[in-house]
Length: 324
Image 1 (tube, rainbow, N blue to C red):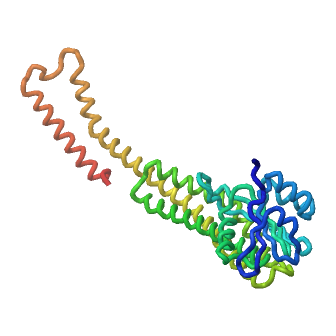
Image 2: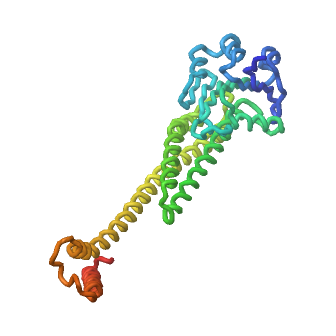
Image 3: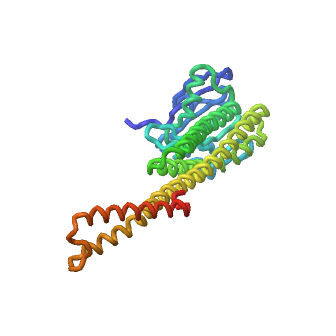
């Protein structure tokens, strides 16, 4: 049996609750019945058929609503609202930065919401309605949607900022490759999030200024506050990206410094033992005429000369400040 594209259909009661409808109830709905909220999966055949034949949405706008990769934006069409926002992907085993498009067609007595992948934002509003604490009308529903999307975005951005702060603390004591990989991953996530949130900030700022008969000043004020929060999140992403870059540079600098210190120690050791190695190689050649070759005390005398020579070298290195 095929899955229906009608995910949710609610007839809002104006008090925060709603009556659940099916396709039959949707088709028999009239404006006088109250505000209708539909949540559709636009990829399922029965939802596609309803959008094409019964929704009453103009073809050009309908095609824009089901576009594969839409850009966040808010547009007024007469007394209707065309709105596309991006929400955090909170599905299991999903990448949060692979954001979910939530497409909205808003009218005074009807709001049609389209999505393909499950949206926790929409499901949270559904849960509010089931508890009797949901939106009361179309304007309230759009405000709910904007606030809830921004809330989840802010939570995700704060988590990313906390992760980068933790990496900044670790860079003082840890220089392993895992930390470099984490920083690069955090930076990629910040860039990916900002790609969608920057135009979404502009869309919400525009939405807060739109004048519609059913989208009243209290609704616009709520969206304006959500837009300010979105702007703060974008600024936090910019700061997080820059902090990750600075931390990467600091980590690379510390690694380079550690490498230079180790090479410096090796150079000092080489400088100390190079003359000793030369003398040993010279005395070890397999030819006649090596001095004191038959004397039993010669070995200990040579060791004493070596010790004195090393002591003199170390004294000279310290005098020149080569030991730091």
